[in-house]
View 1 (tube, rainbow, N blue to C red):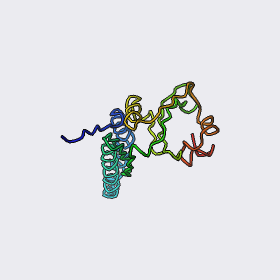
View 2: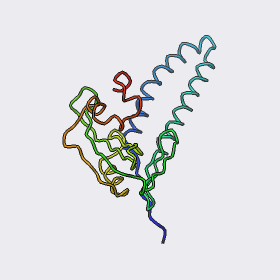
View 3: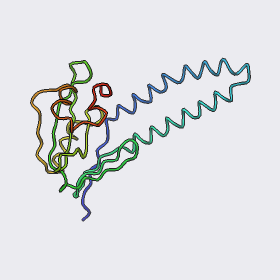
View 4: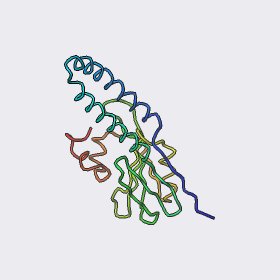
Length: 178
């Protein structure tokens, strides 16, 4: 019998929002550019740029659909938006921390899961903007590591002060983080 692998995917509504945003931004712009350049004969340049935008959008769509987290008997495999694949064997994971982080300067919070190795280094980070809370809990369960849930929500500044090792390098500096 083949071991079972579960594949987790980001929220599907992100794809729809992204496509709608791209269409809302590019359609009026290109309509006006075609309207202005067709009489002068400069429309082939606009067409070329339009094709580049369509190709970039297609690549972004493919990247979105290839973003996954696979849960298997040997651990977790994350395939990121830019194609980077990270394998996390269950034996290397040390702990998981689930934090509700305030979004910007609002009262809204989103969960974030940080799975750290036995050396304290972050192995995988799942943000609530992209992943469901249930998926985050499944990852921690699959890796069979203790899951610590912070009882209160924190701001990025508080997290920066108390646990900077959990953040990306650019988030550790107030000007670059949110």
